[in-house]
Image (tube, rainbow, N blue to C red):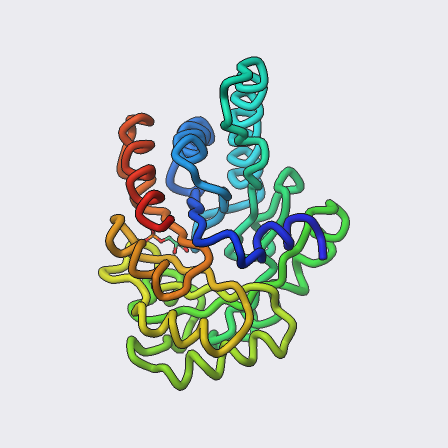
Length: 265
Ligand code: 1GP
């Protein structure tokens, strides 16, 4: 297992928080400021990707910009012996819509199968298309099962997902077991970015009880309360995207994320 897989799949660290930055929604500079605010608030990973309008160019520019900003802060904090911030340890990980939105500058990639897609493109097609690039660039692939639950949002539409129903415990359990049997290292339960409600916490519990895989949960989590509900149900990672884009002021964003992250610890 590579370094990034070990970092992402460690289950003994309690619930951790990551942000997802969509390069289609912001300039690389804005993305870097938001990533910095998240790092300072205690986020432990930056995912980069989106369901549409991302390409090699905007993904790469965004990752390079975030990387430079985090490195600069690392340098500054290394000059200050009292500081315990070390954002350089926060990995920047591709969370791609497909093989046409990758970058060699990332630390790794969630190499995923949208398990409940009805389209072979998202089950195996994009993976085959992107695998040579990942191999050549040397970025670490972290095998991940990706399951889209109701309401599903754009990710559900674009990915042609046969959505997991709000209360469909039987199906989520079966997929969780299959994800483990297929050798994935992580299982991501997605409600869709900007969704009206997050994944049902009871469904998270079922997934957690059905397999040994670390569980990532995202979509529609906009406050400390829903983040805590997901954490208490067994989520190892909580992902937020949209709330990151609601604040142009970095200190305001940092305060909101700090509150959310404290809620899941
Ligand atoms: C995207 O689940 C994440 O995969 C983020 O969702 O934008 O609703 O936080 P939100």
